Amino acid sequence: MRALYPGSFDPLTLGHLDLIERACRLFEVVVVAVLQNPSKTPVFSLRERLDQIETATRHLSNVEVGSFDGLTVQYARHCQAAVILRGLRALSDFEFELQIAHTNKSLAADIETVFLATATQHSFLSSSVVKEVARFGGDVRHMVPMGVADDLIRLLNRTSPGT
Image 1: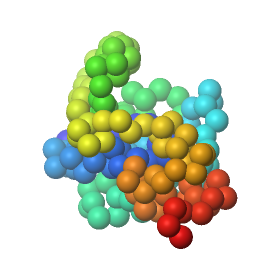
Image 2: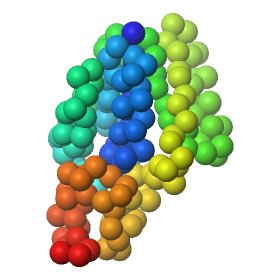
Image 3: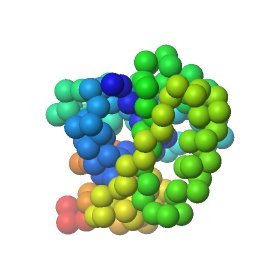
Image 4: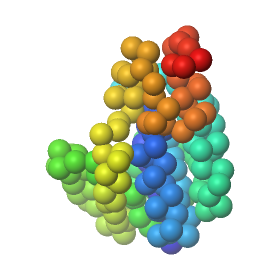
């Protein structure tokens, strides 16, 4: 069975990566897809985000990386995914994610949404938190894959603490 894990991944966090790794044990193929959301202004370009995901998931043989715009269920059909995968960090995520899951179900009754709880050590992470810490010069190496940390440092013209 194929699963689609959609998101903006701006940037990819260790929480995202943990979810991808765990999903790879549950599904034959996990398609990690960057949503090109016109209502958001990402820090990283689409190409940079795709490269970051490809680099961070290189050790996983059953990951495919792509991008899409439009409805998630349409892309799920396009990539032949029977499942849309979503992560839950806290109870506050659940209400929004459940609303999206019900909307997707109303659009595509044959596609299921599966929620995976974020690992405890990553439950505080969000792309927004990572960007905020990085903007103020904080060390994000424990929050994102190493390549992403390097990209953030380079993007924000900062030097890594301890260097």
